[in-house]
Length: 336
Image 1 (tube, helix red, strand yellow):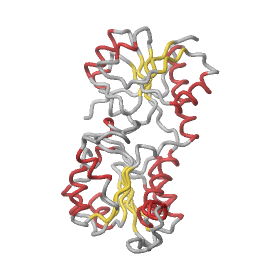
Image 2 (cartoon, rainbow, N blue to C red):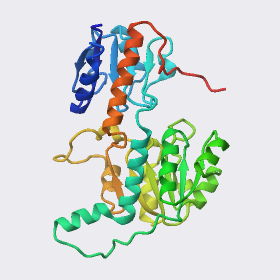
Image 3 (cartoon, rainbow, N blue to C red):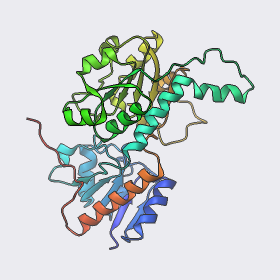
């Protein structure tokens, strides 16, 4: 087809999988090292389609600039779309996403964080490398019989419930739209969010980010949790007020935290700052807690997920070029 695509913030793995599946479509993909910003948006000139990731903040000004460059489609190679001002984009530019690329990859990563934090695997790795084989400070607990609270029972949340059941945990969940048939099928109990906070030994976040649940985990909700709770966030960074999380860790109300997403991650994640000074004091403090494990938004990062992202994104672009209905279009809908 020859359609030009301006592909922002391209990594080596993006090129590998998109090139593999683009053989079927023959698009002209211009891989750009830079993130989409007001300084780099001019690089989209000549392309009707841009491809961006969750770290690209596509607000009103950028949308206006994209429209002026004759860009007609924003292809998100992600499930989340809160980084795009959909209300402002409506009627100006179309937006598509990848609604589901590998729910199991994120759920498995969440359980990996739980296991590592519980059994101190990450600490053991560094200790043994310097010849320290003591067990002091390394005590964990059996997951069997513990209560895990799953916030959000979409595809990823349901995968997480299945994994937790495999460990013979007591599973409770909260969701704005609970489905009793799902609870019966997967053997868990729906409870209110307040009840989940008070009963859970581990809380794992798997809900999308909305205006209503921004900073869902904050000083007030942390106070309602059980003592020594573990918090896992593989959802969206802004579900957690990080400063309040740190205070909960300092007071030892929170036993441990596994963070794959961070509310200001677009400044650091997916880039190498190993020889630089991290200017974000909150992130710098967070990563030095021994009972905190920070991973750089890699929950999705499996071969299967990257294949699905490339396939779905390219198929959406193909539908756009062929003027077919966009299966994965995201359109702003005003709340009533």
